Length: 470
Ligand code: AMP
Image (cartoon, rainbow, N blue to C red):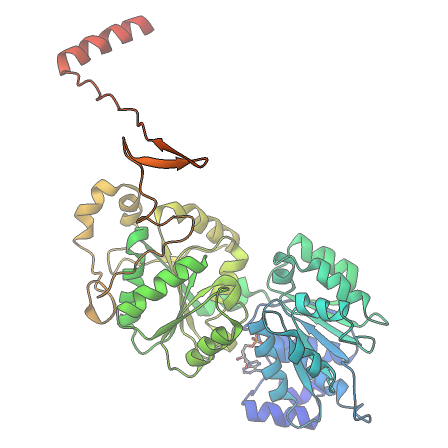
């Protein structure tokens, strides 16, 4: 099939030529004509399947027909979970609508309200927004959504997971009539089903199941490894594929920063992406990665969701994600738009169970890598530190570009919870301390040394104990 058969306008087809899209992806083939017929749509389609174009192209086609007024209020609203995804979708829409006079804009949290208020006073045809900030603008009456006739909920599963249901309800209440609605999510859980029942009418349903159809392009492999050695292996794997770019995923912000510090110290060009960074810094890191100025992006799940980096061949799961959904989102950064990809998971002993759960839910077995000595035999090793010593010598962990260890060691950040070790020393016997405004002398109870027991006495005690049990 080609795009012409989908009844898209010349303006849109010309834009697609510039993008060098030759054929519609399966989701585009299935839903573009349905959206043009004003049908509601429910799609299980992960990022990477071409869903942004699948909903944007027909929306652009429909909205461009009615541009008589100079000032126009938003008619299409696209709700997304993260600001990164908002920026990305807006950029795609601008690309696809380049031959029309349509205007699109973004609204998201983490930045000042004022510039957004000014933005909302201008013409906007398509508004891309995160629910939290948009709900704030609605409450402060900065935005008028009465003309909305098309609504897209993108990555709806993530929006619900992030606890946006209340804000979404506020937003739905601000429409004058029920808009044509499209619900996209990577997974179909109970909460998505319930949301669909509430907001969709006779929806056209489609399932472009990433698990079965798309992930076959992604080689998913596993290294069994001790937790403490993971950074070193990451550095080694990146150094070994020095012409490729990598996204390294971690569950927490702190781990992301630690891994980032380690990789930087081992000589790799990298940046980190997590919720403690300002929007500007996060965008800059993504841009540097896109422009190939850096080789590695160390990111947490939420901040990297939906990010589209063309031709990215590798992702590394530094740790195993909490859910199958997160796993699917992570690996979806690679193997996009029909290209091949590699997803490498580093599994320590406490994560073997989570890995098995993911394998079971995805109905697949990951490839266990043996080449560097991190194969199946390591399952026993990582469970037992004693055998570890022997096996360790066999393995090649050199770090990027052959460095054995990073030059500078990552210092553990001292947080308030840790206290200040210089100040908060444990008081010793005889020290003076202040308690309730009074000076007191510390009395520490001396610990009695444990009695040593010789083997003859031990045997005697054991014997009498066992006979008392009989
Ligand atoms: P998405 O799932 O919308 O995040 O899109 C994933 C990637 O596929 C993006 O880089 C798009 O530019 C690209 N893409 C979307 N549709 C097509 C197509 N028909 N042909 C080639 N690439 C596409």
